[in-house]
Every structure is written in structure tokens, then in C-alpha cells.
Image 1 (cartoon, helix red, strand yellow):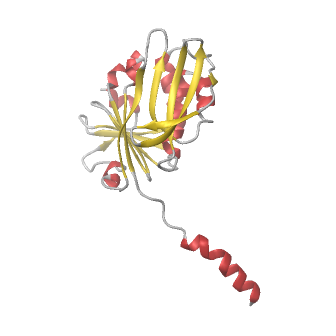
Image 2 (cartoon, rainbow, N blue to C red):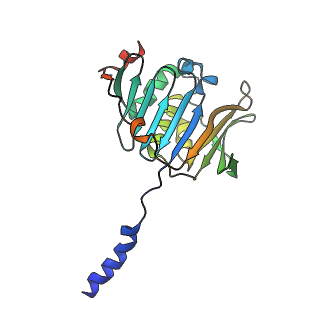
Length: 223
């Protein structure tokens, strides 16, 4: 009986642990400013939720729930959708990006604490050369969104495997990314738009609309 009582006491903290706090983080990405092969997508609005991530462009949308092996890609104009394995993102991007940055490997400078808007954040500087670097500001204001991190790692890996390997070591959630290269001075690639602590809109954002039809091939969505 005494042993059972001890086990029950040890179990109480786990049983009483609160559920993860819901959140809705909205980011704006403009990758085409530095990578012209992405120009067809224009500005990308990213919605991070505790249950997954959604991306919206003027042409295609996509979402992926936590721990899902796939990204659901939608063409709202064609009213079609398909599933793309997360692990295929890198190879798709690599075909579009070419080999210019494929073998580039940066180094990481000493992190610096600061703020992005009202959120506490840490700057991680990826150094590519004496006057070439990318600043990634990451925050712990929300739990790390593993699905978002997996997709971003795949995407960056398609451009530069060495950069992706280093970026995986950066903790937190990126909320501001700025590129400083010879051709790009203080060029924002990712900006913070808003953060609310609720799950409003999450259910609809992470499911296929009822009017969508399934397309077996990704190429069907390009039409």
C-alpha cells in the first residue's frame, strides 16, 4: 500500500500538467526577393498553430499537421489538392534552385539576446564570408513547432545542405530573418506579423476544404 501511495504521488504532477497553450503565429515570407526561382509564389503568409502549420500564396496553399509525413498542397483556383511527402521538399527545391549554393557551409557567430517587436528573441548569425551573413531571430514565446522546423529544414537543405545542418542547431521559432550579402543589403526574408494566444481558425486552416477534389500528381496543380 505504501508503495502504491508513493507511485500515486509521483503521478500527480503529470496528471495535473496543463494542456499546451494554443497560439496563432503569423509570419510573412518573401523568399523570391533573394531566390528568383520562387518568384511565381510571391509573398507567402505562414500560419503556425499548436496543431500544425499552413502557408498561403496568391496561387497555391498548403498545410501540414504535426507528425504528418505529408504536406497537403491546394490549388484553390483549380479546386484540387494533393499530398506531398515532407521528405520530398528538399529534392523539389534543389531542382528549382540549381547548384550555385549547394556546397556553401556557413559558421555560427555567438548568439545575441534582443527583441523583435514586443517578443524576446535571440539573434543567430550565419556567416558565409567577411561581408556575407544571414541573421535569424528566434523566440521561445511559443513552443517549437516541429512540423514547421522539419519543412524549413527540408527547404533550406534543397538550397544548401550545409546551411540546413547548421540551422537545425538553432533553438526556438524564427520570427525575423534578414540577408546581408553583396547584392542584398538588409533584405528581410521573414517578418513577424502577429501573435495571439488562441486557436481561432486553426481547425479550418489544417483541413481540406469541402469543394476540393483530389489530384494524384503534384504536376496537376501547376496548371
